[in-house]
Length: 564
Image (cartoon, rainbow, N blue to C red; front, side, top):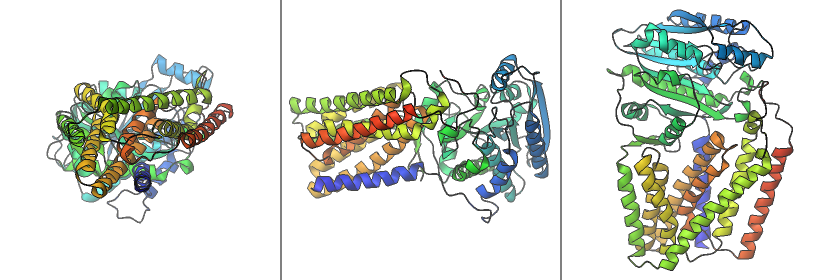
């Protein structure tokens, strides 16, 4: 009974922490002090610029450009524009969107420079794009980015003249292949005066804004982020994964240069990505607040630096439930692995029974394989076994997340329904994860923390259970289980939003890491009860999968969407 109560406490706390980590802040009203970011003030710009679709070359695009030039000039910026014809590839994309031929338009970048007191210092550049895709008003992608920059700059100006130039680069033709940014960073003379870049983007209509990409050699840049951003969302795991993906933003051409850089975006409410329905009224204003507040905090800190951050060794970093940023040198991962081994070694006290150890390894393999198989099969039932419509699958992500949760819980209940719950069993369950942490530390040290830290805490938990006595050990284990499981809930949510429609099996990683710390308080149950409860969960999962499969195409889907 004590074990069951501890499990309930740990799960309740973990769910609360997971919600806290993934929920945007409340939008600030226009009554907050002028030196703070206000989503209400920024929404004035969002509403003005997202009344209609404004792809490159359109009359609506011109109207947005005129509005932005006037706004920047009124704020004291030296404003210029830079135009060039779009490429044949961009023309082909416009033809695909439009369904007919049309003359090739010009892209027009907007460049604003706010002079600083020392114009010889490298400038800070804030960047976003103002064009939208065809038939989408683009309130999120990327009018939110533009509006967050305008409001952040307004708040910065309350401190007086900056000590270095502040550049606002608002690009065109991002949706046609990053062509505005490519043109600027290849030809414009101002590019040589920039030292650091902050880019803002969106894929969806809400959710937490994350700093998901940096330039290589991010050590100094991350330290400034850590010290300045009060409610962060970031992860070096995300930075590592993004570098492997074939995805791009306007920051991509900039990263070919010598700049230090940060990239911010939100990806929640994914069905609204490139949607004809993503108007200002549908935008999550909390996400706008989240983006703008982080950009303002970071910009204020960068503008106050005597020297902008230089290239230095990459760090391991992540936010702790949005409360603070943890950052450290990758070498500390080896220390954490040693602590994990010492913890489990001290727990078993040198008395390892091979049968018990192998049983723990078998449990890990069973959970991972059964969970992965259920996730894969559920995805097939939901419609991934044939041609899929990308934007429709994005709209289905909330239901796919519920399917993933049910699959993971069913696998856990089936495999962990009974067991000895001895230190050797626990050590056996941890052994594959220790090996995974070792390999990660060798080949991907900035990403390996997501395995190494839970393994270290599990080792400390095991040692505490064996050396502190039942009551104190149970309290320590419950606290650790709450913290690690809360982080894994948030991680699973982020993974499913990022790659869930095509690769839901990624949910196995947070599953096994959460179970690692929950294992000693996981209650035994009869085989009949375990099979019955897991069966009910799987039936519900199949029902949701069929709902996704049989539903009409979501009305949020982009007008130019096709099956693939």
